[in-house]
Image (tube, rainbow, N blue to C red; front, side):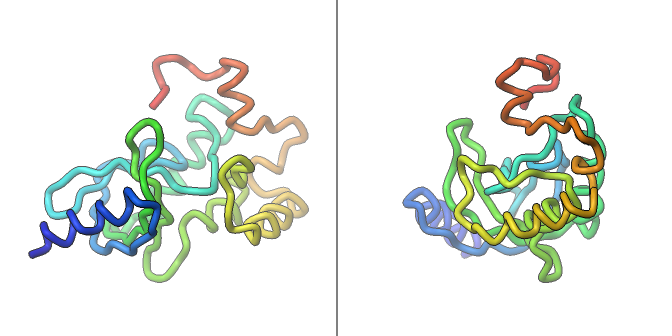
Amino acid sequence: MKFFFTILIFCFCSGGLAELVEDFQVIRIVDGDTVYASLEGMPYMIRLVEIDAPEIDQPFGEVAKAYLGELLSGRIFSAELSGRDRYGRYLGRLYQSGLDINREMVNEGLAWVYDSYVTDKSLYGHQEIARKVGKGVWSVDDAVPPWEWRRMGLQNEDLRH
């Protein structure tokens, strides 16, 4: 029955509708905006929507990855899946114990609002607060957004996901 539910959710997600799926188990944290998880033994690579965390070899990249790991330390989470990206990753907003993980990454200054893909404009207010108080990436004057870092080819080729 749960397998059927998983297939049904996949069909809804492919059509652009978001659906909350519960009981994902963390397999591995890839970086500050990507998680490997499983549901009923099926693997999922989930990219957190509307945010972009520093690349692993970028300043604050390891910090963002570690913080995402702390947020998901219970190892079980829910995700509102809304389709897939061009790399085949599921797109999702993650929740654990009612906490919006994507928003929390922005709150802590460990992810930028991803201008090209944001739909929840309230995230900009959270980003501005983090910037004003100098949290995370906002604690330095020369922080480079990850999309510019990737465009400039600054990331280590071996660390791309």
